[in-house]
Every structure is written in structure tokens, then in C-alpha cells.
Image (cartoon, rainbow, N blue to C red):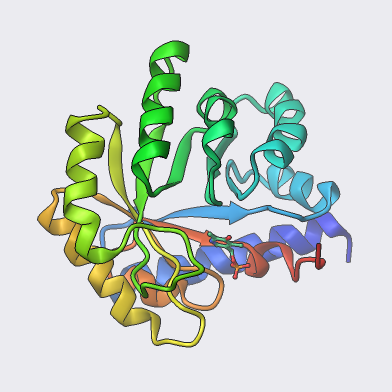
Length: 226
Ligand SMILES: *Cc1c(COP(=O)(O)O)cnc(C)c1O
């Protein structure tokens, strides 16, 4: 089987299982978008997904994303790339200049830097606030208890185009509890978008109203260690 056939087959089966979950949970058709997480994958696999017609991708590093996606975007103008990894303040300009959405807004200094670059570049990618639902010390994201205030200041103080929330549940816990918590925080803050669910748990996330699932391994196969 060629790489192109393999990736196309994976995209079809992930899309099918998203559609099944959407139907099972009685969500509106088309209410869940698949972000194909292409980080670290060899370029032939990434290209295969584009050739199969997929257009929405997720990357976790700014420089890596620019290097591989700028040329592809010249060829396929409708490609969209979302940043799903931690963002350093000093990369805010590159991130605002390139990405269609940033899922990892998680601290005031970053919010301020993004606001500044958005004004300077006159470009306003959608922003998601990352919530550290498991309160894991090593993990990025605002704590749930601080989320309401941070969301409010991102909107009013920094004027960011906040569209939703994002979380990465702790590896060793039932993800459903974290998805439920994220949904609750989004609801009380009037946010429509929920970026949650990965290869192992995206169907569950759809049951808790995920609007964007971030799926890497199930689309591209196991990543090489870096
Ligand atoms: C790598 C990554 C994913 C994809 O994970 P898989 O288990 O390979 O589907 C999703 N979200 C984030 C934030 C990631 O870093």
C-alpha cells in the first residue's frame, strides 16, 4: 500500500467514526471538525493528507509549522493550520502572522503579546484559552478556578478574539470528567468552541460537545520520537 492510500484510508476511517459519534450523540451533522495533527510527521505523510483533500491541520511548534506549511500553502491556498502546542511570548509575532487559530492562550503575558502583534499585523487568528483541567504542575493552561477571570481579561482587557476553550486531560485519568468540566466553563462564559479529544478519546469528547478534535496518530500513524 502506498503512503497516499494509507493516509487516505486513515482519514476516511477517522471521519467515519466522527460521523458515527456525531449521530450517536444526536449532534448536528457537520458540528465537529477534524484537526489532523501533523507535528513531527514526515512530509510525504503530511502531503498525502493534503492530496486526499484534507485541509485543516494542527502543529505544536511555530518554526516547524512555518517551514513545512508555507510552501504547501502556496500550492493549496485553502489549507488552515492551528497552533496546538505551547507558545513562547517571543514567538507571538510569527504565530499571529501565520496560524489561523491559536489553541494555547494560557497566561496574561502571552495574551498581551498576542494582542500587540494582532494590532501590529492587523491579523486576528481565533484564540482558544487552554485550561489545565487536571491542575498538573508540569502542564500548560490556566487553572479552572482562574479561568473565568482570565477569559474575561482576554476579551475585555486585551481584546482577543476568544472563540473557545482547549484542554489536554491527564494521561492516567478518565477524560470524560475533564471534557465535562471544559464544557461547563465554556458554557458559563458564552464560548461556542471546544477543542478537545485526541486519537484515544475523540469519540468521548464528541459526546461532551467537542467542536474540534485534534487527531494525530489515528490519521498519520505513530510519531517518530524526537
Ligand atoms: C500531539 C497532540 C495531539 C494528537 O495526539 P494523538 O494522540 O496522536 O492523536 C492532540 N493535541 C495536542 C495538544 C497534541 O500535542
